[in-house]
Length: 154
Image (cartoon, rainbow, N blue to C red; front, top):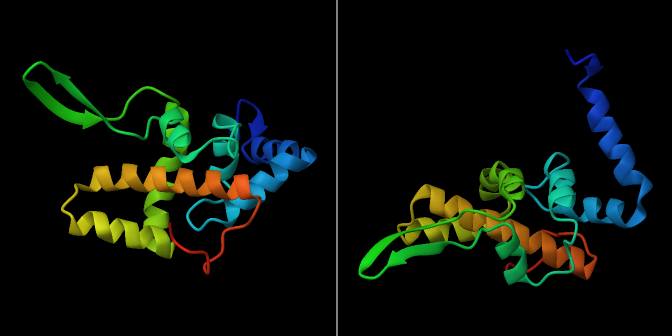
């Protein structure tokens, strides 16, 4: 199948080539791909939409992607908390890896179970898992180490 005269595999190969040419970016991609749930499709998107990954603290990483819910209130009126603004493309890149991580990553599975037991709705749990994935990836890139199943869950 082709898109505007160019095979679909060519852009993926070009992205992989571009990342491989830059040693620090290639190392970040390797670290991101080591996290269960994030894979070869999500890692380049995270690197594209959050190039400063590894240089942020955990609160900044969540805030940049606007994965920190904020409440809508005015006077006596209270609305539901929501996420909006920020880097929507980064949120979109984390949305599909979240359910995968909930299923296969033991640390994320534990967090997901905790949220479910607390009675949180599914969408709120997914947003929390997206933030946890981003914070984990940011911490690993900052420490320059691969994720390991033996790593303690924070």
